[in-house]
Structure formats: C-alpha cells, structure tokens
Image 1 (spheres, helix red, strand yellow):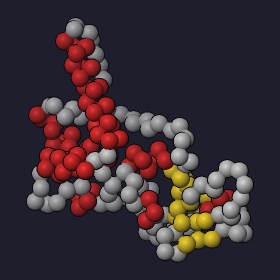
Image 2 (image 1 turned 90 degrees about the horizontal axis):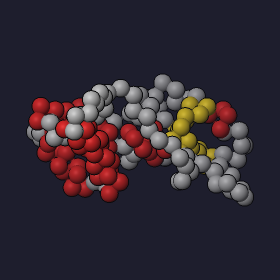
Image 3 (image 1 turned 90 degrees about the vertical axis):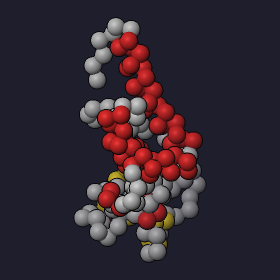
Image 4 (image 1 turned 135 degrees about the horizontal axis):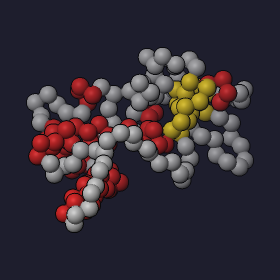
Length: 169
C-alpha cells in the first residue's frame, strides 16, 4: 500500500528503490520546524536552509493513502547503506521454461515503477516476455546488474548440484 500510494515525487522509483531509499516517519515529528513549507503541487516538504548535514527530502503519500495526514516518506541521503532483505523463497529462474512467465512478471514487478499491477507492467495485448524484453532494452545498467545477479544465484545452485552438493533453497 505504501508503494502504490507513494507521492508523485517518488513515482519514478521501482519497488526495490522505494523500500531501500526511503523510510516512513510521523508528520508531526519531522515537521517541527515552523519554517517548513509544503509544496502543494509536488507534496514535497521543504525545510530551512542550514549549515551541516543537508535536509532530507520529505514526500507526502497520495491523499488515497490511509495515513496521508499522519505519515510521510523521507528519502535517505545518497550514500546510505541499506540492503533489501527478501523474505521467503528465492526469485524464479529465468532459464526454467515452466517458470519463464512468472520470472518475467516478478522481475517487472521488482524493477519497473508501477501503481496498478494489472495495467502498468504490460499492455493487455503483450506477453510477459515481450514486456520484459522492452523493459530490458531501456533498463539502466544497475537494473540489468540486478537481473544478472538474480540469475547468478541460479547458475551457482545448478553448478553445485552438478558437483554433487546437496543444495536446498
């Protein structure tokens, strides 16, 4: 819900970047400065200019978010160290013919910005593979590296199984 109803200033973030590069805070606690200004067009909160550490960008959720009046997103500074921790089974393998469509859909969900899963990841007349290939042709080097790293896990697992190691994921 937080990702779907993120403010317009964060609309270009994919789901990984949203959860790694932002955190949620109470509006009351983060807006204690009387000189804070809310830009009504972008829902960005601007703080006072000051010496030292730069003011972190604050973005309100869309009005459709249930906590619109009480919570907002704060964007971490550029060189912070936060890693995603995916709970559950590992991502599908892109080389497994039985899971290809699921792999394409999962990777698009992870790396392509969206608000509505039913309409934003692919056109109704497209296959998941077509949508994925179009995404990859415009993807950033970082996004392509993430895709490569996900496949690397599966290659290592397959190599370990070929060498007689008992691998359970």
